[in-house]
Image 1: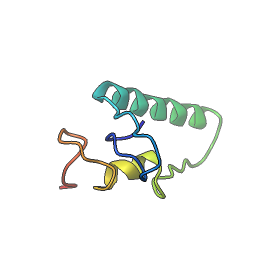
Image 2: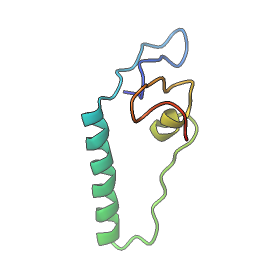
Image 3: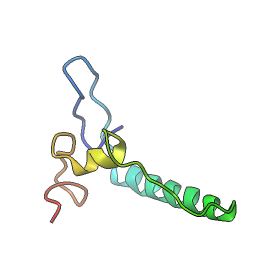
Length: 75
């Protein structure tokens, strides 16, 4: 899955674009994981949002070609 159905290179298959419902579920899963971490006593949580990971893909015009609330200009 990815923000848009854009393959990494010419040899890769196009990923399935996440729907807005998919994105809402992912956000809730991140929140659930954070709540579990707090409950277990973790003092900090790091979300890796670089090097092609999903959060980075949403910030990159190379992989995010959406025209809804989850794409376009960062402004």
